[in-house]
Image 1: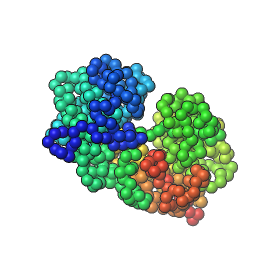
Image 2: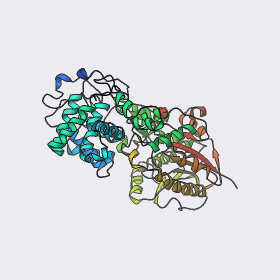
Image 3: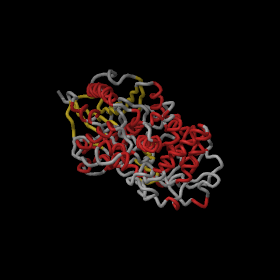
Image 4: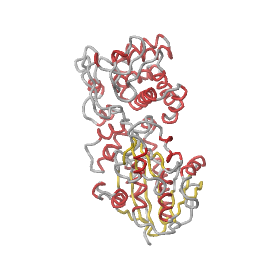
Length: 511
């Protein structure tokens, strides 16, 4: 944008963001390649190979961008969840391969980064985004993400987005979209960051990485408690990097090394011996072991913390285990597979009947008689001292898995933390009642927030907090010193490449 030397004209280079895992920098504007449009907007002569789905032949009307807008509208206007609505939208538009990858990257990136893009749009429009028509605002998110967050040539990003606006919103709004996106395209990502989020304050870092300020503040406190005071920017950046798909090879049912050999682009997980990471695309549901429930999609961090309960001490024949909040069933199936090998049994409890049915589906491959699924309230269910081990994967804000859910960060509020904390404390109290004296409870959250992790554990009565690092080390074949200060284990997305899972291991006192 002219008139301010802090925003450079032309293209210097782009930063790493949600779609730039390799950190490559963008080239000059006139030579920079990207996914073009029809006619003279980004034709074949103006493209070179690029990441994701951005290098493909254009079509006269662009169904990939239309699909991305459908997803953004379904999430932002209708309260949908991107991971649930996008497969249907891709099917409706008959998109596959690179087109589907491009549409997904565009929609998810726009949803994830719209906090930052709103600041850019407001500056370019010289008005608050609340004064902009919501439909035009969503289209502008898509255009801004192509310009500032993807390898798409400026002329293609602007031209195709304006065409989309004209088709969906009409001529007048499309002219507004055109004017704003042209202003956005006049500067680099770094230059816009310097303008709308200057300095190194926590709020500025949060805005540059498109996180609500309160979320960034809570994450910063959790990092500090774990001895990682200066790592907020790295964590927020990792939240904006889409996660690779990880599979769990359920023990006794599937072998991780065999899956690596069978599945193109697969490689062993970094920590869990059960983990397989898929580096390429493709549908995990097409893998035979996944269809047969011998394997499943599951974050490697989830595998680590669940397996730690098993590895904490030798399993004795006849032990009874409980998964207190079992839905949708990934950890229950992993525990059930371990239980079958150790001649133990597992009860899987779930509050909601429809989620209990998901648990039943997840454990189909476990030998009959090992896993029993029940519906009930985990804060009050069960007989005292009935179990040897209890896994409590407590309901939480999910702020440790923001890379998987592009809309999640914008739907949480500070009051959610307090509401969840009360439920977490009641669930942990009942878990300790249900386990026998000397028995083990694994308290797990997919959130690193102190209010949901350390604070809950600190208030637990009648329990001794064990050093969870030893159990994790045993489960992963690593050293306890690899897992932080202890006694808890906090995984971090930017450090371990997993969701930011928390694990505390508690033992019920003998008296």
